[in-house]
Length: 608
Image: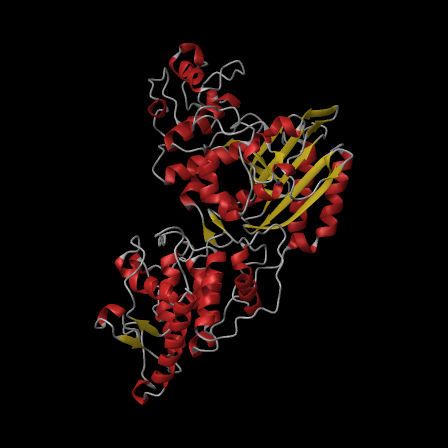
């Protein structure tokens, strides 16, 4: 590979020198309708095409304003228009740029291929999974050493390009162009694991400022790069080579964080609430404008022996239901699930009442909530087909609302049967992996089980770490529902990532990971309030005029001495996650655990 890469670089530099000597190429005007780049398909076999970067007329920046680039953040709009103008990232259907969509590996390589200004007829594309429209670019990238496949003979052209993968491509591309690729800054990120092969590339990208504005709240090495972010990165890469790119007003960084500005005051409020409510250990994470910005901890992970940190993992109790709700929304997007189909469809039985996923999410299924009912498949099938498995009323009727842990176990099993996959895998593939979050319904499967904390009540230990880690994957997807009502294990930071996704209408750090329609579905609720004043969503709750906010979506959780609260403001994108153990179980005027409510109100106050 090294010899092929060196040969490609030498050839490219030679071609650039040759083209620069051609007077006919100078001063030519380009436009969006007539791109200066010819495709390799227009050349005869073996012919090499080279195109010099051209000078632009003074009014070209104004021309960019006429390019329609919908669904792009305002600060990224000029970069998106420039990328369209240069034919690096084409518009999609109906003239939309679709800036939040993750860029694919093929799109990233195609953009660099066109950006190079040299389109070469090379060997056939070595990867059979690459569509024809990208074959020349992928073949060029392989010959020049800029990008290879992911495994075997696969290039995975449709997979999202991650921040790590793109950094490696950019670093190799700069070397191919003969640029200085030495990094003078060693970047260290708390909790962010960059693969060894990519460390130099990531450091160089950060040193060059190419990811400026993307990493203010964390590196997230496995997170995809959106199309609008890719446009900004490419514009930064070309600033010294392209007059238009050099004239663009590119985003400088994320907005200031109120939680970070008030970090010491919030930390003091967390400590005081923990002390007053007798908590053994506390974790708090903050979301601002749809981004995780700060985290706090207090007390012990292991009472009297190991201090709590932001990295420790705790059983989140009924916040698990939010993870189940997210899984349902993702499976609906994939076409594996119908919210309004009788769940007997997935169980292969005829239910005695028409129970749906929507009913289970809203606690209106009328299934009997009895801990004596078996959580295994045989027990659930027996319940679904027996009149004794149901309480009175019609499923879906709010008059039949009853908070139902057992029904959420059945829901988790139903989702796994519909998908043919474990929910841990569904969440890992779509959300947790890109976020770099180590969470699981099966605590024994965590990558760092040593971070799991024991669970304490005011009177002492309730569940040991060993007990929690005995929970491993069940025999097959859907074989057990025991963990879905309350067994999810995570840190407050992990849960804050999921909260930020909801607060950002499906976007996380500028990248769309789930559809906005899915978030709207999870937030949907009726007009009639439950006793106590909250409104039941799917499965969130909504309450108005709470903790200084006009409205908050939220979920609580308690088990084995754990008292937790997840909440977010859909109007501002702010959110707070509080995980506690060993505290008093007193509730406040909103029927929320007082230790969580007090901390949450304090944090929201500092964010205003």
